[in-house]
Image 1 (cartoon, one colour):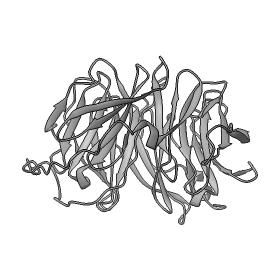
Image 2 (cartoon, rainbow, N blue to C red; image 1 turned 180 degrees about the horizontal axis):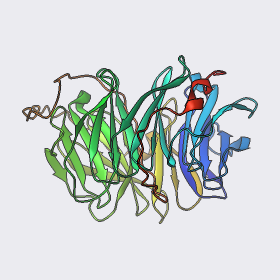
Image 3 (cartoon, rainbow, N blue to C red; image 1 turned 60 degrees about the vertical axis):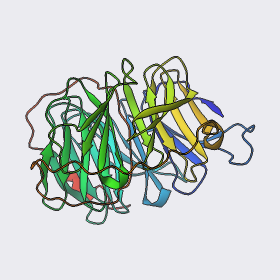
Length: 359
């Protein structure tokens, strides 16, 4: 299934229980489409169109069980929109001091946002405030994922580093050494033992949990095409979207390209996402199209990778604690916009206490 969005899209997200997909566009609009799961010949129907922001809508996430959509923008604002009516539930006009670039769900009542200056904030919907703020990077936040058991946020950045933010201690616990180029995407693999980062040169960097200073392995077979977005299919395989428009199935430890599974277009793939039932893989690219791929069909040619049990790399001492955990996954990246390198402490802004009052 294909949807012509008419504008360049920066983010997509699927409803957690219904056949709905949201997309944030370059003109600040938020689109919501309903698709059919049993008849792929029927065209998706647009059920909501909201002009959410005065500048582009870079990030979009369903929250509160799918009752609302949260969006972020270079206009520094975060907006909560009612899915049923399209009405504004709440707007925080100064959520960050720089462009809001990424949004992810952490728990049922918390979300995280990242901006172009490298700041990450955590918002608590119950307390209706910003509860954590981390000055983690010197450049834009390209992607964020969450290690739920350890209560830690992992983020990649245009400054070429991976950061680990400890929510319990409210501090940046660890940060990798600078890599040779920008890190654009991140996923957790191997039941939390490995962190995989995609880079601008197409190299996958693998870090062992607790040993974040330097990568333990590098996979170069995708090199020359930036890995703009990644999704974890299972603990052994990821799906990558690259600037050449290809969507690849890649095995991790052993590292190998299993096969190309789809070609979005000749233009870069901006974001990938799974539908709530994992029947569809959604992709957006610079061709202004949103495509829904039948996941079973595009994976037919690949056989499940045999699990290869690998030992955890010995701790090199850069971790405050050695906790292991099962993980949740999230992935993605965005082209950075204009940077604002103003000095910032990153504390919650004054009106944030009322942001989630109606959620």
